[in-house]
Image 1 (cartoon, one colour):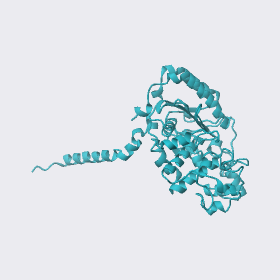
Image 2 (tube, rainbow, N blue to C red; image 1 turned 90 degrees about the vertical axis):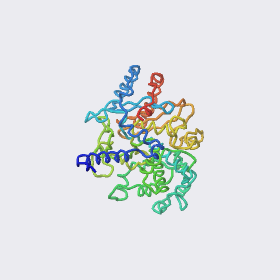
Image 3 (cartoon, rainbow, N blue to C red; image 1 turned 45 degrees about the vertical axis):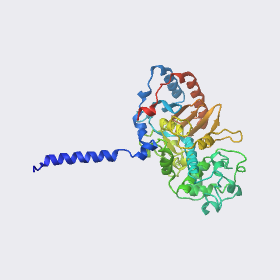
Image 4 (cartoon, rainbow, N blue to C red; image 1 turned 60 degrees about the vertical axis):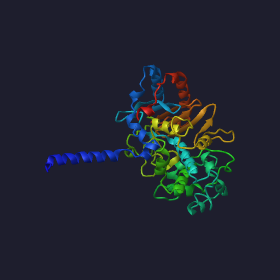
Length: 431
């Protein structure tokens, strides 16, 4: 028998090793079924050139004029129609100091758009039989029944708050003496704390204040209410909020690059934009009392502590993908049942807010907005199935009121240029 020489043996072993690596790298059938593998890397694959069209030159000029008027350094725009991604493009700079251009896949803080994501998580839990929307939040039989909370409740009305009331901003929670989510420095001073209060301590402090109204009888926008919903998800699942949401809501939707934000520029996530304030914006004390002078969007408030109320970071195209997964339309498989989607988007004169959505007026569409220091985010899903998303990396002096300005601009762009958008689906082009 002829004995192979060492060179042939080594070559055969190399081929075998390569085959093993390839087999390991092939996505499992489970992931393929969930749709994750088919769109993995969407932020890395999409380029500005994929949406370049000569007939959109005027729209591009309008977009750049809008940015110039409001001194926006960078902006990302995505347009989806009936679950097909027609347009996704970045404008300006993702990082002005480094002169990095904005790409469609650049991820940015989306502020209160995070509430829509959290609401979807609650609905998913309900479908799993782990929660009821009528369930009480506090009290002996409530979800958050730890004595750290119940021992400090000053108003018996807290025992009547339900999960649904938190989703609809009807839980009696008020910001008349300041938003609990943006008062960390006050809490540290008042309660002589050496560290920023975590979510449990913050809750035990917040529930000492009397409610602003009887739960279910009125409404007032509440970031704290959505922190409570984040904590409820953790209590019901026994897992970290971010991890559970990624594995059970976002990745099944095909969104693999959603993360909770960090506070400093040095901690930014891969592919994340730099955030910018207006040039005349004064520096402020840091949220943890460790510095007297920081740029407001990098330490003025504890962004990460917002969790499901306002801490998510993502790109405009992946945000479009998420919306497509909870809209009830057939193009992209929904992650929620038809009943859950219908309930989230139902319109009622009895409620100002939807379940996660700002509004769900069938004549105007479904709206979700977000605003934080250094960013604005806007999602408008029109009744005909066309969805416009805009995220910017620059603070507008109007603050939350800037959403109305964005809305008017987007409506104008849609009227002028909707018919000129490319007939393509960028979701399928990268599979």
